[in-house]
Length: 590
Ligand code: BES
Ligand code: ZN
Image (cartoon, rainbow, N blue to C red):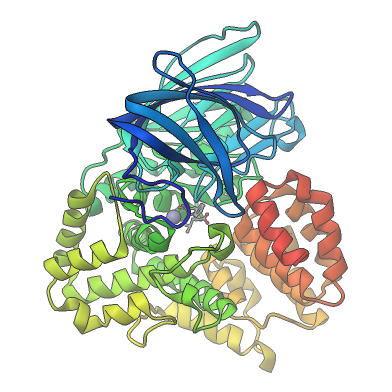
């Protein structure tokens, strides 16, 4: 099978790397990793083998007997990176690449001590989805090319390594003052799930299968916020079937982590912006947990099929929410999702190809077209399927889907075939063709409503006519209530209205990042000066793109605030993860 991944040089007809033995030496002084990757092929091969790399300095490639192999790095594509072509002698079953990463490696963020909670030790972490693994290890960086690995990682002795893999023993490193941590990943993964972090990291057990890792300063808060993890795990197993990754641990990251969460197997990464102190944002943990099935067991074949990962996962996340908190909570969450979906579709244009479920991402950087469409349109499609066939039948369908495709990567076409085989006639009935292959949102999208939702949206819609929430009542609103309300408010408010909201509800000093970011976007759009300092501090503390992008866009869009956007970005760009920096640059610099 040749590789159909438009974002990789991988050609599986040349051979497949099934296992890697990695040896990584982290040098905080130069912000580089000295790496050695022994690549073992699924079957012996000969001739050219193409791998992906980005900004890697390839030093040597040797055969198992130590002889040097020819290679070239002659082909570079701005989006995909550099093709590493190794010439394999006939019958090769393994070879070793020695290489050095670049200080600008797109997957890696090197943090100064000042950017950590403790402020004393440096920190390093990776974020490989969608196509950044190639900047850390030379690999067939396509989700179609799963591999297992062992990895030894050597770091300064004061630091700890955690990895999305099973930890082994740690030992003194070969050079004085270093320590080597050993890991093994026995389940095969797509390369985008390769992940590690290095820093002053400690942990606490939360259940028989779960533990939270974080810096010591954040441990207690994290353990409290996510104490329900084991209940979530049980709930998820009820939806999907057994959990096959042994443990579900997670790491609460420094503030600059560019996503809400990342489903790295055995070690989910989470943003510290979830630490609201009231467990109101734990849905992100449920989401990453659900990826253990939809995404990590059953994986999208390429970014074109990303909705298979995210749509099913959002559906599962909301099912877990329904089980744990009830239908009202689910309706609010779906409504927040739908707001985000409409905003994303409108910003692409309702007839844009990027509003389809299956997309053609070739020639475009996945980080550039990342949006809520695959999440929320995907969710609505899966929810429609569920609604149409009934929960019991749909649950059987989902369990069978997981079982059938576990540890494989599948295309949208394969999914459609499976759906037609298992649920005959349903695709026609719901117009699956339109859902999957046409832009926009079909008329028969499920609608989730609740009394609370209607009340909140009605209240906000009447804002311009002078309607105001009762202050005492609104003070008791949940964070989700606030989000719904603020998302339905006009994007620009008169100064007096901003002042009314801020003085009654102290929004500028909100600790809940969802409330705060929704408020700051309105305040920025309104040019509300009393909130400018908080915008400055928020944009310097937090690297989560979900918050950065709308706030920078709102600031950049206003006459009065455009310069402020540029100024804040200039002051903080160096502290953002390369992926976030690139994303904001597109907004602020154009
Ligand atoms: N896998 C994604 C994060 C991701 C996607 C990273 C694409 C890089 C490229 C993760 O599961 C995710 O969706 N996170 C969301 C959480 C949310 C939808 C609950 C986030 O980061 O906000
Ligand atoms: Zn996700």
